[in-house]
Length: 606
Image (cartoon, rainbow, N blue to C red; front, side, top):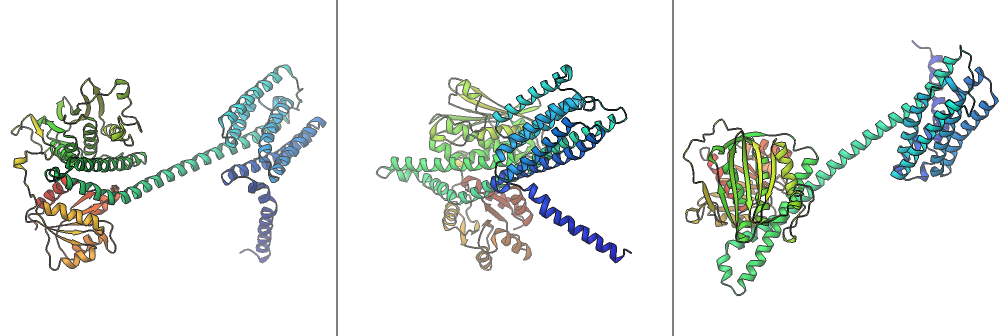
């Protein structure tokens, strides 16, 4: 057990060290920091530390060497160098940081030339070279950010090294002779001092690199979150614009009977095209943010029908095609019907290339989607009637490359994203241009689904898809949701009314609620076949509704509508029990397809 006297001594010593730190060390380290911008204060503190440590080493190590070999010129140089480092801190204290930076470099230049020559064989010339190129250039590049300044210091350091090297040969400054028994001590002191300085700069550069990396990662995360939040806010009004213009386009015949009906229809088409382009811009920005954040690196392989996926993409783009009078032609190779790959990636690739093909084709023309099996690869081709010069075709897959005309202007990210997604799937994408057509071809590794059977009855090689639907109009059901009861939980009245109108026209019986709590109250008297719920609502929200249904053992399927594309959110919806997730702005054809899938899946349960 320590005696009270020893404990008191330790406490007293600790107190004295704190006082020394507060009244002597801290003022030196922070000298002049109030005279520089916040972003330069860290560099200034490091500068003061280097000046103070170097000055102390000059006094201590130089004093030891002077005691071994007394020399008046050496002592004068020693005093001048120590005074110079003290002066640099004083300059910073007076707000002259710019002058002190130059003074630091000049002081080290003087030290390298004079002491490098005077110490002679005790200071290896290779160590001086390492000191100049590691410490002097490294510290200068940390302090000066402009490339012109850095280039000047690098050139000056090289010239200084030439002077030091020539002095070893021509002895402009005579070297001091050290007794053999003291030579190792002097060498160790010189090497130790220089190694300390080089180590300080190296550690400081590593810390700076780590800090900048962390700041870059945080900035990337903040940017991704900002893009997600902004896109979510934009999707709600955008959903209303696109949805209502699609409904108006369905009444084309009635509109044409009006006076100026064609002009009205043209305005509606422009509104719909503008909304669709805006939706694509938002989706592309989100996808690029995910790619840059490294969230698109992991593949999620599953078995699915490639041609069903292509048909669904065609359904989603039916309105866009109709506005330009474009016919979509399918040419499918049934050998690649069932595949194993990343369904989401292929859907995004298809959507980007199909949207691009429709946007840039001639009005009243054809867009052809074809699939082929080429050895161990499956090939997807998208051909339209347009012309792209060869010099521009090579640039189409670069980020932010401008689109080909102002009417379909966007961010220029769609094809860049497509290329990255194809590369993640270990495939390739190319573009072929001709006088009358442009064809984008995607080649991906072909992995046949275990459950797939390509030997079934082959479908016709070519099918013409009218802009209004993916099947002949005579066979298309006019009310695909006839007799289906649907409950909508949506707090935004415009979106609520839009959904109600879409579903009612499809034949469904619809009830509406503004909140999840209202939806729960209606379940006592209204028994829906399916519920469509917004994610963000006052009160419980969509997740709260799912938790309630699970708690009371109700098996009514719930489709969550959300503006978020985050994988974390989608996984959260699935974990909470959602039957499906649909992204805002809601595509009508996709909504009807999802409802059909959900109702079919839950038919036995219900």
